[in-house]
Length: 456
Image 1: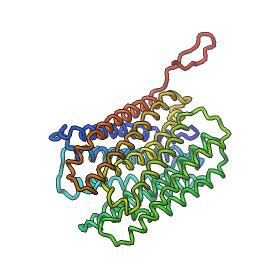
Image 2: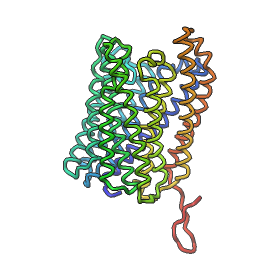
Image 3: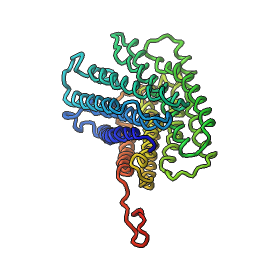
């Protein structure tokens, strides 16, 4: 660790991993409710568990991004973080807001209250007071890292990272605009949901992945920066107008069918670019870095993002196909692999790289870490295929033949059982990862040379 303030990242990563464990556990519970619909229905209804599952995903990913920024920016800017105190204050606000959300959701507090009660918009259900807290925390964060970068060295990595983080901060302001017209509501709702995950978050992903490639491969910075700018250009070119693939059926003009189809079809390009970038950098690399687990997660991130966000997104993004498939299990298949590949894997890659450095130790428990990758990646890939088959059957039976929704759900129960099984693998992999990065291997002292020897 070159800079003392990089230790801020350790606290963010620890909180993020705690929420990660809660999020995947909630996902497993949801998987069980699909096969046993009345399970906990009186105590913990499906809609509440789903809100906790999706909201904890978003929060822990954001905390991971913030921790990654606090780790990457001092090294890139060649100076300490502007104010460590502000960084910890920001984290306290985020944790307080998270606890407030959980309590509000679980006990359905302040129902109907505009300030204290939960809202009805998917992914943006947080009470208004929590949204205000998120904005305050985000502005503190942006001030802190922007001042650090402005006072230090500027690189392509810091420029792209700042652009992505400022973008996601400003776009979140649309979460406060909730018009009564449903079509208008959905138009602006996607400004947050789509332009985050298929716009600004991609910039964060590209910049952090570039940092990891720089450290793990030893390739010249100039080469990495050229790739980075190319990926960013394609991400913004396709992602902004690609928002139109969400406008097909919400009451917007018909030209969005063509705009959305064309530009969202191009969204596969930046993800292919990131995959090619990662593998080419490793191929060109001169460095035999000891942290093989971080390298595996980095390559896995780029590959799974290409298939989950790119290929599976393309499968049903054209309006002629989407007319039948939107809102089916095909959407769930795409969403699960896209989020896991692009953003979960990215965070776990930077965690794998940074934890040994922040703990001031050599990379440890790498075999367990890599085993957790194959468990989670394998489980999520199998889940994606299972949900794809379920969605295909659902689309034909429900949208083409016109069968009743619940009859179709009964017909695809076997796929839900298989999804639950894959969810077990993902949860086991997540717990194994947390153990691998958080618990150092014990070391024994060899009596002959008094040198530390890693205990098996």
